[in-house]
Image: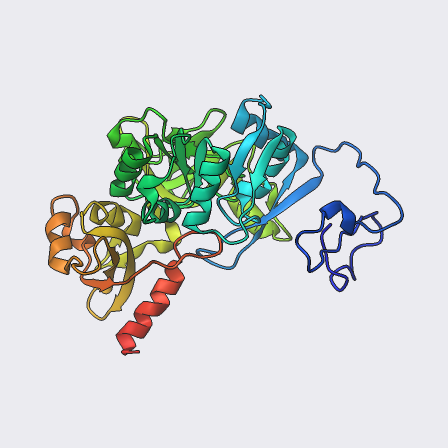
Length: 400
């Protein structure tokens, strides 16, 4: 256990715990920080022992502790690698170290002989340096990081020929970004969908996906995973109908720490309720429509922000877009498009977005206001912070 002297107080005495106290010098070897004295015994095998706890990003509420056992971590290794250990290699922790994508996978990654580079502070230039120096075969992270890499002034002078795939998750990737990244990295762009609760395992687009799959969907269930779209009563819906996405995977959490009610709501008969809205298209690919809690109602009609964002994001002058609701005395709620422009000196207008959206969306789904910003806020889990945007919209409305 890593702890400071103060934090070590209160650790249960019923179990033998070896304390490692971090010091101010990050260069000291970790093993040199071990307390002198007894060596911690090797724990007995127990596949159901709580082994790992990760916290959700809190994108729709307070962060919750999600816990996993040895059995689930072993399943994650099996699903990620097919049980093959491989011969190591270099990789970068693309997200915060406490993220589920690191916490539940670091065991098998280290056991395979991998070298994991943990950046003290993520920067595009720093990651490009690592890619060139260690010839990293894959680029992992979130869409915003890929965009920042390509904005580096010396990007074209870098030798990035080692990159064989780009794997992105934690949020949507604008189609224009996918196309640009595939061209400039000369590598396939894979989108992964998962959650903290699923252990970072879920759906994904294929390395050989056609444009319809690669640009507009989150792909199909990965091997060993089942997925269904269900109505509020848990009944399966037909192709094309929007409902809640349910996952069945051996990597799914044991539950929320000290939250039996929340656990019972999310884990039902061996299935995980994700809280995400989606539909299945005729090709069997899943298309996200947003979070259930993000849905808003305009004049009695449901509007799914992610569905609207997927259309508006295809405008060439839109680098990123988020749609949030604003209270309205007539309609109850209306949509506001918050846009990061591709070219700050010529941002799109609301009319530009409406002209694009009318061909693909019903009128009630179209935004009725636009905000131009230089970036979209992300939370600690590198996901769009819609609550922050909603708070900003309130301030904008108040004239602050």
